[in-house]
Length: 214
Image 1 (cartoon, rainbow, N blue to C red):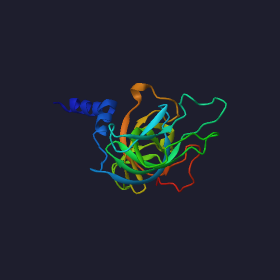
Image 2 (image 1 turned 180 degrees about the vertical axis):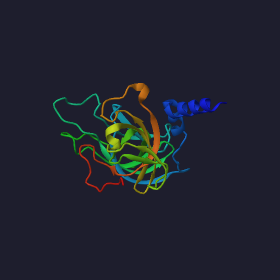
Image 3 (image 1 turned 90 degrees about the vertical axis):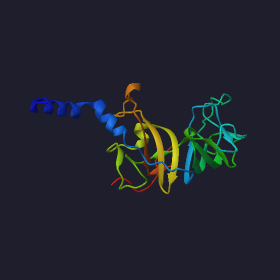
Image 4 (image 1 turned 60 degrees about the horizontal axis):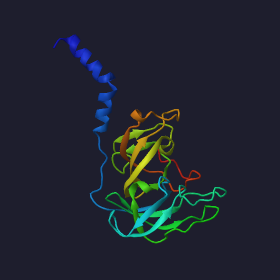
């Protein structure tokens, strides 16, 4: 290969967004091999009329209760309803163990299952007041995502909580907004997995906490 052809090949590698994206996607976040203990609060994802709470971490486990959502069929349009909140205590194999559910924010609180039980990992939402995702629950590990001055909660849709480690959550996400906070076309909605901190359990407001981004 001539020097000219070698230079052209290097330029193509540098400029090709597909190749760059492929290299980026090759870096995988560390995923714990077993269940993890969690100490976070969050709220329901309101994509379903109701969220089933099961006795075990399995789709075949007995349903012990449910959590209403803002898409329920019997909602009074004259009243204000909010997402049900709860505590997360364990993450395991695509399932989340929760307890202490409450609908006290709603104008007319609905019945909720308040005991311990399991919901699917994609049925819980949290706010992330951080722009950076890492390969491990360590700010010194490789950075897999950097949104500069934007918080994760403003740019992505969470697809599921995978694991916990102290103040960190391992999250599956999908990019939804660009740097101008304009919606991305479906073909540009890249998915990823990374460890984040700066977790906020409030849907309505941001949390008063120190910045976790250096």
